Length: 237
View 1 (cartoon, rainbow, N blue to C red):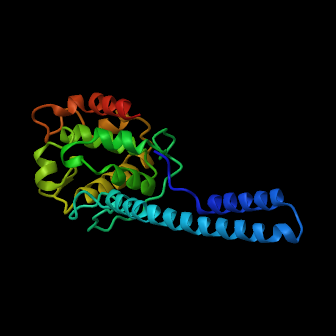
View 2: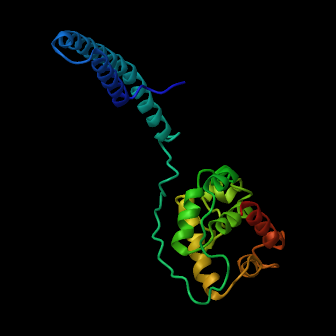
View 3: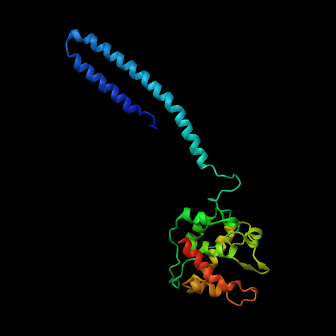
């Protein structure tokens, strides 16, 4: 389907036709009346065509504006994934010289990451990216840990406590007011207590993050932590 006719193009076309008519009529008093009549006719024609174009463009512009507004409107007025609902204060932690890993922040494919996250993690890709920027950590690493810890957003800890990283508190699993808070807290913890302490790989992080034989892991899930996180990290990258 062709787009609306450009008004400038129409004006230039009409003026070009007017000039051609004048050239064909020649010069002199005998032709001046004919030239004037032709010019008047062309101007009237141009005005009518412009008015028609404006009438055609009005509904198209209105439809375009409506479509744009519809595209920008969030699917749910109660949740906007681009806005982190942070209720905790997340302190800054700089990257230390001890971090020699390849797990520092890097750009990721937003749509690819967003499409992989499900359940309680759905719509949180932007939080993983922003937390990664804040704490200089690869967002895919943060996402891979969360996917493994929660069964991709399906665990009770994620759904009941907004805890997507297995973070522990004084009384067991920590509770968060939002998933975004949990993501930022995980990133802070990894930067401060793992990467800045020289942990350079997922295996080294896992040995401390989910130690095999830990008292709080009676079913032995920690045995699969490094393999599981590595698998999801590879899929995301």
